[in-house]
Length: 402
Image 1: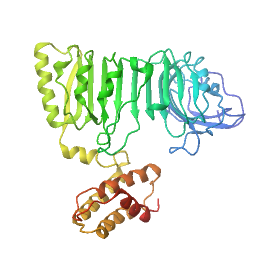
Image 2: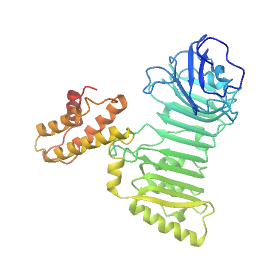
Image 3: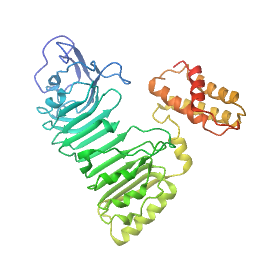
Image 4: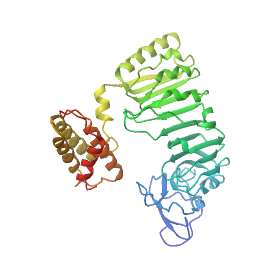
């Protein structure tokens, strides 16, 4: 339908087009559904990535306006929802109409208890950031397959039906020198059997000593930087183990530690540890074949981690990332020759100025550049004294226009 104020055509609506929606009031929004578009974002203009349908965080939403929409195959559309705001009505809506996947960033003024037990949601992601105040307590949907929690995990508690899989992405520091992160008490979620943990590959590590709170684990997937790997030996019931993008494997128990292990993947891991795992995998296959799948691939040398993950430009568009890495290389070379603080300041200032005329430097990129400046300040130099983070940040702030 076009943007005039006629009623929506009878369900199901499967075609691309522009449709007037009574999302927050009569004719309040126009949905531009493009070909192949399976996802939809809703949220306030202030978000880092503006939503496709702009809705203030405290506005009420008429979720039922999406009920006429369907995919060409006939399943509910949108398939993937992303919502930033405080309207929890999507839980009640999902009692009538299934949601395949929704990623929710709560904007809640106070501690909030919610009952989602009757909601038909397959995948639920909750991003617990500074927009939420107090605790979010949720009775989980009975049909929930995957629950993903990111941000400040201490702000969330769950009860009711356990999800089939649980993914945790806690707020982490980019400083590998920071004390290891320890998982908080996750209450009833400790009973899950399938767990995924994510951390930055070269940032603050997660201590695996905290895994003892998950006595029923059968499947474990680790992504990033971890310590206390020897604690994995206590997970005797593991049938599946995945290690991905791990630059350190020191302390990892031998594969024969887990007698029930039938599936094992090591992908993009440090070279020396990866070679040991290959030997163990082959030796185990001679005694008992792998019932499912086993693979050790993409073994990485130390310099690969520094280039690919040590710099904070990996998520940038290729053109900007290339320029950023070239500027970083030049600044690092200048820092290596610096013999006093003035020369170090000049190197960091020159690096910072390179981005003043570039388009696309928003909040996220500015934070990445600030991280790069800190890394440069800690790189090799000939000054004879350390450069404080405060000094490097001051040079960065004085030179930047973004």
